[in-house]
Length: 56
Image 1 (cartoon, helix red, strand yellow):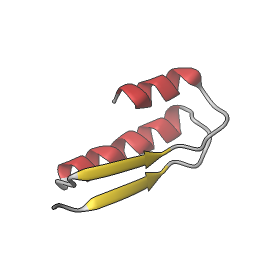
Image 2 (spheres, rainbow, N blue to C red):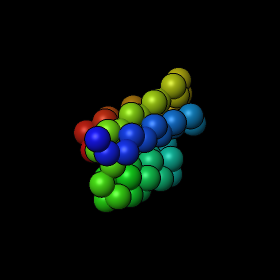
Image 3 (cartoon, rainbow, N blue to C red):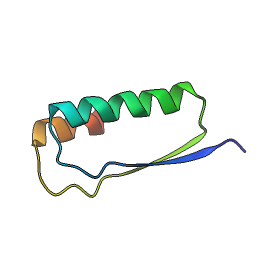
Image 4 (cartoon, rainbow, N blue to C red):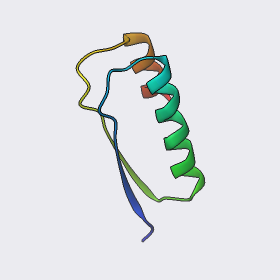
């Protein structure tokens, strides 16, 4: 079984934070991680950028 990673996204959702998160997830995927967990306890921010991250 491959490596397992947890990514905690604990900030308001906006264009800058969404871009950073996409880059982090992209790097984890590129590294060949077999199981990924994305934890997003954010309670404020842009709905548009939240849906963008979700669709990625």
